[in-house]
Each structure stands twice: as structure tokens, then as C-alpha cells.
Length: 238
Length: 272
Image (cartoon, rainbow over all chains, first blue to last red):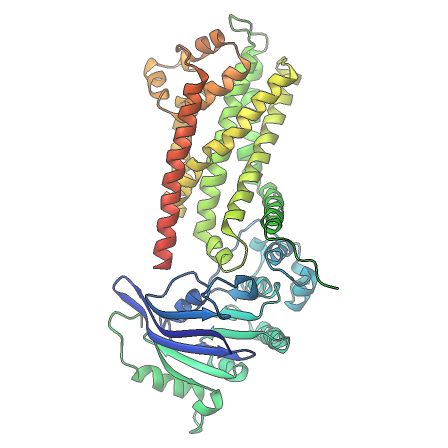
């Protein structure tokens, strides 16, 4: 059974088309990378899956129900997510955890995300990478079945990325499913079971990395070929 | 053994407690808040009220009591406008509501927690000001009068919360602080919180009768000051308390509707 699915989804913001007939399905236990240039519609996919925006047409399901119905089973990390400033790391993770039926202990989550020594720091005192790890901690604290991560490693250095993906894999080993967006093709190739390439609001490819690389080229070449060849949707963000 | 799962009704209440406690803690980490919202009304009272110790209005009301009520009204309305207006607008600007909306934490619980926190802050302001007035301003009131004054003032935070929310949702986040000040300072001045209306030009008093803050002040004065002294202090003939109550409640309803409309419009725009 699919943990999430978008079927024939269109999303328009006034004259601008963000998604023009997208079909994506993710099965339980998969790690799926969503690749695409800026403005491809990746963030819109996450906003639809979280119920933050509604599709103009098509159907979106998360855990067998409309988005937002099972928010207590989903952990999310939004791109450039905002945080309150005078709250400590431990307080914030604890606050979000309380909203889940069976949260993990805050201490455990902070240790997993390498934030234990920052527990009593306020959000304003964190570096960019630490903020990202805090957002991950907030996504993990509810021990969710589904992790939706929009460019989760954007502000992280190499070491932090490795830690991040070790954690994500551990969550998958515990039974979670992960859909993440990234611009880092190496990361997608190394981490994902499957890669979905979107551009101009359309899905251009949906396959395991090894299939995309069947002709022996690099994923970067495949990605550039796909996105350069894709026809522009009228009014789409490119 | 089966796990104990809280009932659906208990969960929001538990979250409300956690949210309120968290917001209370974080508010005291902000120096601007501690000084601006908590200390300024007390300092203003010390500056303008305490030098008038010994002065009495004709029916025997200490002037220090009239000024206490004025400054406490100023403090409470300030809390409502800045807690609900400036803070919520800043949170909108930072994107915290969007982050929260992606979690199971209900946004309404967050806002209710903010309201509960504002009530606690207002209670603290009122208690500290009352203590200063009793200790240094020779203000003596029966316990019941203190309690009814405190209840009126603390209730004011909730009655003016819609004004704050209206600023938060109608103004652009970056402009909210300026707009809050532009709204708050003239309202406080024209409602007689800084200077008794009886000492200001008559036009100010005529304008004041259209302001909800003026009517809130009248309600507060009337809980502890005889009507003849209120008339002298305000420089206008007294109206029945229900008139003031209707003004304050009606403005809360109108501003609440404006805030709700703006919040819904934002949600619809976001949802497309």
C-alpha cells in the first residue's frame, strides 16, 4: 500500500502553474528523493502533502486519507521553516512532541540529532546547521511513520549531512518512510531508493538511481538532460 | 498491558498548559518585554502618581488611586496590543505559524496559550502596581474592591486581544510594531490614561467618547472611585456602566471579526 500518493495533481496560483498533472506514489519503507531545479514545484508537493495548500485539481492522499487527517503520524521539515526566537531547543522539541500520541524522550531525540549540548540554548543562539538539526529533531520527536523533508540538508556541512542521513536511515529501519527534496544529486544517488525528477510542474523521471544511470553516465548529466529537454508549462515557475 | 492514551478532550488542555508555560518562560527571556510591558506602567505610576500622595478628589478619593487606575489601564491595553499584535505579527513574519501547521500542534491552542499568558502578565502588572500604590501611594481599599478592580483590568486584556489580533493579521509583519504604536499611543492619550481628560482640551474628551479604551477606563474607575470623583477626574458627565461595557464588548466583537476575516483571507490565499 502506498503511504502517500499524488494523482493527476495540478496546482495553480493565479496565472502561475506550480504543478501540471503530477503523479507520485511512495510505498512504505521507501526513501524517495524529489529532484528538480528551483521553482520546479517541489515545495508545492510538500505543502500539498501536509495539507497546507489544496490542489487545484487531482487527488492527494497521505496514509490513506486526505492530507492533514493523520498529522500525528507525519513528521515534517519545511524549507526555510520559521521558529520562535526566545524558546530553548529542548522546550521546542518537547512542545512539538507533546502533540504526538507516543513521542520519543526529548533527551533521546536531542542526542540523535547531536543537539544534546545545545538543549538549553535559545533558537537565536543556534547556527544554520544547528537550526536544521533542530527542525529535524522536531520532525523526529513524534516517531512518525512518514517523514516529509523539504531540502533538509541545505544549510549543513558535510559532517552534519552524514549524521543527518544516518538518522534518516535509522528512522526507516524503525519502519518510517521518507520523501525528501534536494538539489544535491550525489546525496540523492547515495541515499534514495528511488529518484523522482520534476521540472516545470511535471514529473520527468521516476526510477531507482541505478536505472537512471543505466547508460553509465552521472546522475548530474541525466538530470541536466531531463530538465533541459522538458517543455515549459505555460506560466510555470522555471 | 495497554498503553494509557489521553482522551481527545484532555489533549488540547494539556497542550494549552504546556504552551502557556513555554510562552511565559520565553516572555521573561526578552528584555524588551520585561521592560516595555511590565516595568514601564509601574515606572510611570511612580513618576506621575506617587508625587501626588496626599491629594484628594472632592469625594475623598486619593489622586494616587485615580492615577493607579489610569496607568494600570495603560499597562493592560499595552499588553493586549503588543502581545497579540506585535508578537503574533512577528511570528507570522518568521513563518512560525506555517511550521506549526505542519505539526499536530493546533494553532488555536498556541493562540489560546498566548491569551492565557497575557492574562498572567496582566495579573502580575496589576499586583505589582497595587503593591506600589498601597505601600507608597497611601491607597487603601477593601479586599473586595481590589479584587473587582483586578478582575476588570485583567479582563481588559482579553477584551482588547481582538484589537491586537486585528493589527497582527491586517498589517504586514514588519509594519506591525509601528502600527501598534500608532494605534496605542493616541488611544492611551485620548482616553485619559496619561493625563486626566478634565485637564486636556475639550475636543480630546469629545473624541474619547468614541474610543473603546476610554470606555474601558470608565469601567475601571467606576469599580473603585465614586461617580462624582470620576466625573471630575474625567471632566464629563457619567454614563451608566452598561454603556461602557457595551462599547468595549461591541468593539471587541467588531475587531475580532476583522481579525478573523483577515486570518481566513490569509489562510485561503495560502491554500489557493
